[in-house]
Image 1: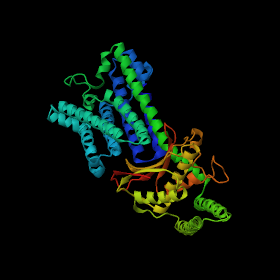
Image 2 (image 1 turned 90 degrees about the vertical axis):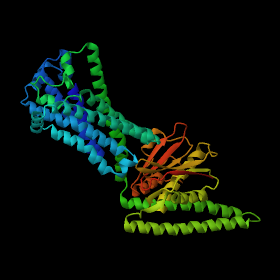
Image 3 (image 1 turned 90 degrees about the horizontal axis):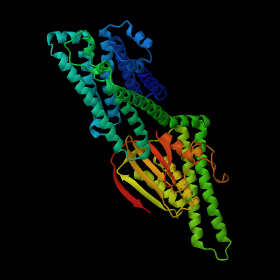
Image 4 (image 1 turned 180 degrees about the vertical axis):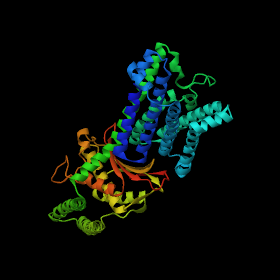
Length: 507
């Protein structure tokens, strides 16, 4: 059972590494590998010790025959001790490295290489001192080294586990955005499950294996409790903790992999549906279509006014001026299309988040002057962006949000635009009070030409247009339904400036 659990964790971590191929996945695979190496070494040790109860034998090996197979593997105790040495001291090191990687504490973020180096130093030194030739020489020169090395190594292992758990929980409770916390919680549960599984057996010192036939060692430690033939209650508790920890670890690992992989898989599917050249054209066509529809509205206003016996000249001038603005905008967009197609890129420069949003607010106010808008933006935050293009994405999300409010009969409720600095991202949130997005449509709303609105006026390019712009900014686009109705769209951009003093703005 124990070997199956560790093998399941190892396979799950290897799967994660294959599909994601980043530092976090590599560390997760190393963590599961070290645990598997350690537990395998313990099983070999227990099989060679013998004297275990039938219940424990079935729990560890399933049958007496399998135990005997482990027992007669051609391994010396020095080789077996070295196997346990590597797995035992690598696990807490990798666990703490993962916790440090996910931590946003300023001390760690400002000095990542120094912190990682210090984290690796103690486990590496311990592994070196536990090498059979080194360990035997130290014990021969100084017999007290056995006790000192045992308590020192066990002490820093417990300290590493405690510090890793502290950093993980500190980060978990520091996250304010729901979907970030949900995703991080799966990783925390996975790592805690593995840590609990490891902590049950981490007392096994490699020196005990090297000194297997010696009777002058430190009491019964490590897996020595296996030889005590514990009662039924103890054994049931042991099995429950092992199975629960292993299954939770495997389950959360797979869920975490699926949750983080899904957006990438969906993006890849969308990329296959639209190539780069057609994307550039679609972005342009979508922008032009919106402007032409606005021109149609203005033309109807002008014609209606001219049909009156006494036209309101002030309204006519206003409509004509607005038509002139739109035409100027069409020329500007044509120039932007030429620049983008020519360079095949957008120009990302440091710009204030509030400046980009103000451009979007201005466009939104001109299209829907009657719309209510509520904003809350962090002061002084900068992002790397092409201000005009990113503003277009925010403007489109705001337009969709207001139309969702109106369709749901909530035209007295505002569209909310918020900015957040969360973990490694600057997040722009656009929230509506509409009916939300059905689950069956969530996977399709970013597809080109998909729309559940009137197709005479909505070509289904809006959200694909937004996603294209966000991807060009090295970001991603997420959507979630709110519990009290409505939908939240999140633009996640790589963090550039982390100052987060907040200001409120209402209109």
